[in-house]
Length: 241
Image (cartoon, rainbow, N blue to C red; front, side, top):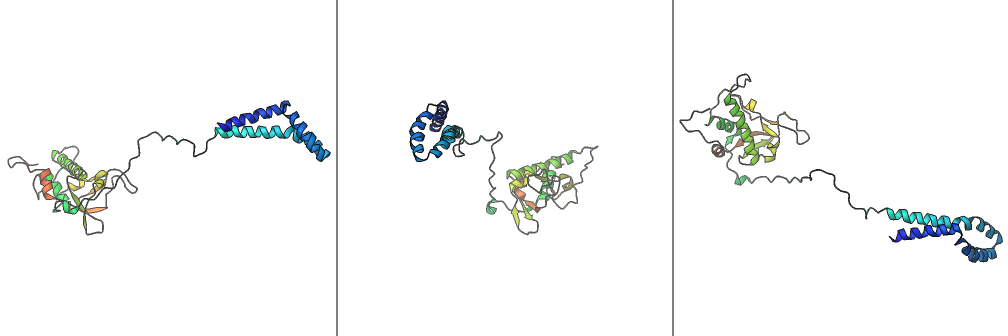
């Protein structure tokens, strides 16, 4: 506020100078008495140029500087910019790996668990038709089982282990793994299949190719008792699929 007032006063003084209110006062007491006594030649040049044009030019420049500077704020004084519209950023916390001692034993392959959940008993498989022109309810059920196993693994209700490619140590599969990976049911459904095929449903990180096989983990295993609890065997008099 002070700078704005000072700039306004400087502009008024500059205007008053051009009108002659201050010029005659300075000329009578400064230029005529002091400069003329020192050097008459300097006095003539000063009166012609410096006296007539110098002070108003300085006052005008000072007034404009103060007024314009008042309207500009330093970066420290500028208010922070408003955030762009959109959802607030999510801070992803790393998943804490489960304590192996708190998990049930790893005692059955995930492939056998898939067939157990579908057939209702261990150690059995059957050929299922995948022809589109002849819908097979058993094949549809098999695909549903694969989706259910993925869901339980993601929720943590079905523990799943695996070995990193090139390693011999089994580790619990992180739940985040199943966020964009699923069981390739149309390959696992084959009677002779000996591998649990996992593929990318969509890309979340660089290198994820939708539809491609996920090769980070292999030799998937789970817990037999948990599978039996999640997919109870049908009654003996109930026809199995």
